[in-house]
Amino acid sequence: QVHLVESGGGLVQAGGSLKVSCVASGRAFSTYSMGWFRQAPGKEREFVAAINWSSGRTNYADSVKGRFTISRDNAENTVYLQMNSLKPEDTAGYYCALDRWGRNYGSRSAYEYWGQGTQVTVSS
Image 1 (cartoon, rainbow, N blue to C red):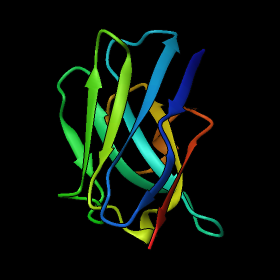
Image 2 (image 1 turned 180 degrees about the vertical axis):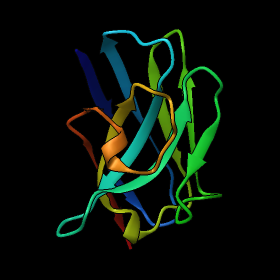
Image 3 (image 1 turned 180 degrees about the horizontal axis):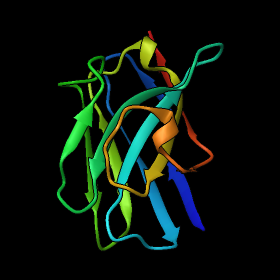
Image 4 (image 1 turned 90 degrees about the horizontal axis):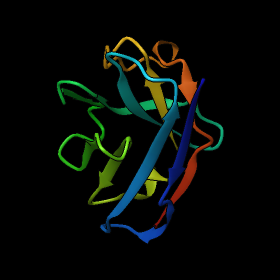
């Protein structure tokens, strides 16, 4: 089993920055990807970014390209999402997820394990 725990959410003004983290523990895989998704009230959960743990290759949603950066710390088993130039429409619960096959897909169905989420609120 894999356990994912997010942290770092909060309230920030538009134009500001925030960094959320996700610590992974439990079962190890030879290759995998970690992704960030977000879900606003009344909306579907949508892909934000993903990173392959071995290669560091990344994938981003068009809506966050140039503003958000995903990174990982192998030693700490932690994935980060640095969010800059935040907009009110970025307000959502942010969830990390793990794809045991390392595909970096933007589809929710590719991810087997999920965290409980951390709330990010951007005020205008």
